[in-house]
Figure (tube, rainbow, N blue to C red):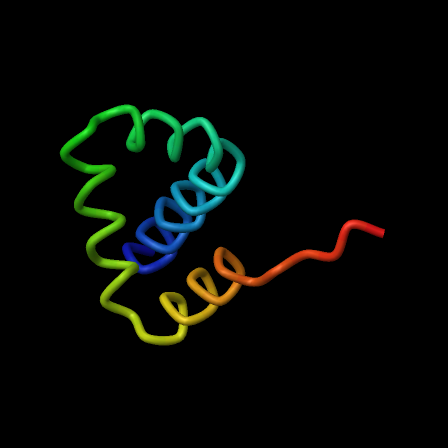
Length: 63
């Protein structure tokens, strides 16, 4: 019985986070310290860093 209760609480929390994920993300990113920390963490991940930097510095053709 206790396992079912814990499972249902965790599942409910996960569904609530998923439902309001963009509002939560906007609240977190509104705090400048957390925003800077998030950028620092993601820029230390090589795959994400390479993808972002390659998209920023590619030349686009204007038709």
